[in-house]
Every structure is written in C-alpha cells, then in structure tokens.
Length: 112
Length: 112
Image (cartoon, rainbow over all chains, first blue to last red; front, top):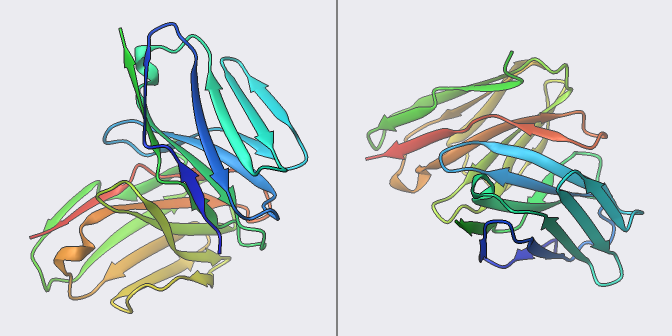
C-alpha cells in the first residue's frame, strides 16, 4: 500500500541549511508536496514537485526528487527561527481524487 | 478573504453529544476534503466530495457523516462523540486534477 516516511526530528542552528528527508512507496504518484505546520496553526503549502522533475527551487527552498529511490528532500537555506515548525511530506494518490498521503511530519527546531 | 475557513476553531464537548464542523471555500474548487490529525500529528484523509458527490470514504465510523450542500461547503457531523474522536479536523479544497490542496486552519475537537 501507499506509505510515506519521514524522520521525526531535526535540530539546526540559525543560519545553517536544513535538509528534511522523505521516502514514499507509490511510484505512480504524480505530485509530491511539502507542507508546513506552525504550532496551533493549519497546513501551509510550501512547494510541490511534479514526478518528472528532479529539482525545484523557490527562494530559500530547494526540493530534490530521486524517483528511482523514491526519495524526496526539502532543503531550507539560511534557516531562521521562524522556520521552526513541523514539515509534512505528502504524495498525491495516483487516482483522480486528489487524495494526499502524508508522512508523520518532521519537527524542525532552529536554535539561535 | 480567507480561502478555506472552518468553524468553530475549538470545540469542547461531552461524550455522547452530537456536533458539527462547518467548512467553506471561496476558491471555486470542485473538490473538498476532511482530514483528521491525531495526537501524534499524523494526518489521514477521511472523506472527499467532488461537486457534492462523495468520492472518498475511508474506513471511518458511520457516526461521522459529511454533507455537502453545494460545492463551496463541506460540513462534518459527528454523532455520539467518543473520547477517541478528540483530534484536529482539517478541511481542504482542490480541483482534483490540479496540483495544490489548500487547507483550513483546523478545528480542535476535545471530547471529555
């Protein structure tokens, strides 16, 4: 079945780069997403990548996709304390429903 | 001009009660979703409606009944609330075939 896995916790110093990793099982997924959830808040779509792309860059965010290994990563350059949040990786179900399958979330802690 | 809005944001109720959560989107999307986030932050889809038609119904107890009066609204009614129903419920909308899914701010339900 479909499954998305992430490491649970990452701690970095302010100004460093953060890399959050994700693996997924459904090779027919068309889109993969990164969402951010701040404490007590909803889910904010950060970025997404289409499955035929290897990389997507959006300001401080870089998404890398290794389709062969079914591995997705999110790199945040110059990490700030405001980046502290839970980051969710999600794959879009191959069907036409738009259903998202989420990983368990990675808590990013940014130390000053 | 909130894109996806849910009410209420917080809901505390006693076991056995019946409650509803409302969701509205002003994005013109055809598809709306309910997701449940448990105490470990794990997110899982519950239901999806496309143009008022139910298209996803995951293994959710039949105490949960979604209702979509029109494509801009998707409400969630829960009968006979149980302690285990305590969670954050997120509404989302998308176009089904498009890329993004936009989430509401969540409704934190606490059953006591």
